[in-house]
Length: 438
Image 1 (spheres, rainbow, N blue to C red):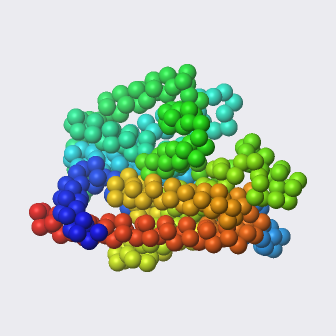
Image 2 (image 1 turned 90 degrees about the vertical axis):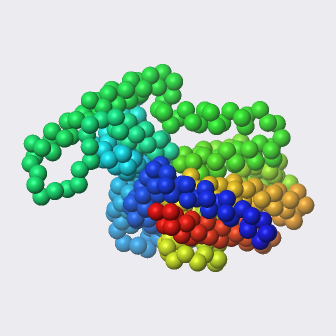
């Protein structure tokens, strides 16, 4: 393994150095760094709101907190406000800052480009349905719309290179008229972009009720529908879902969303209640029996394992600090801090473990169920249940299920650990080489 790393390291460092000089890479890094504090604050508010101040939250259910904590509903409202203006608006922030940094790299008016990008993103997520409660599709403003926000920020920032609205450093010698005159140099492009986005949004109303982002779900859901074998179908669906999350698109499987209404889950639960036997349920291999209880600790991609691996083998103080701040949210499956702060999103080094770790855990759980070492997880548990406890509670306290879940977490940490060391080594060496070249 060490010999392989010695051969791969120079290539990885060279590619990393090239990325450090790429304006797109720099813009993304700067954007994630700027919005991370907002995401972290929102994630902690979301963690408390979902697990403590929601009546179906894990800690709220166990300790009956709605009857213990005074002003329970009022505190929940305050947490929802914080969550809404931080983590739920991360795509809007990303659209702003990506365009800003790209335009600035071309020495163009970054403020006008950033505002144009936000305007275009808002128009693309305009809710054209009649009797809509909100003029915008607010669910697209969080992680769900991050990829589109990045793409449009890059595109609009690049388009501003063709304007005469040059970037100027702040000066004591300025006039309001001069600032306005400079901004007007790029107005024609702003108007053209906004009109184009209006046309696109109007056209999409005939195709998708969820706008531009809704089209991604159509594209990614088609391949899984024609696979009859349930295990292969689950593997493909979870892999596509992980790929979407890695790319900045909230996939159809979200560990924080209540997974209810499936016919297989209902059949399993009815059988368990009627026969008091979990081993013979009619659907032992489903998303609710091998993926959610064993392969989504901390969120999609088993990011709780990444956090633990970083705290275990990581040497970078900034990364360890990010992991430490992400640990408590990660325990209740809130993954946004590590997705943006590490970052996992669009990180090529972490793509491999992010995709394969859930698959390995699903294989472990599949084998344990097929060998009848443990029953399938049947009972519904809160979405904020800490990782390994989900299988334990979902099987009505089966100890083998708890042991298997702990094994899955340990295996996941071992998978992530070398990639954490690799990412740190590549970053350190590329920084040295990059500084030398600079």
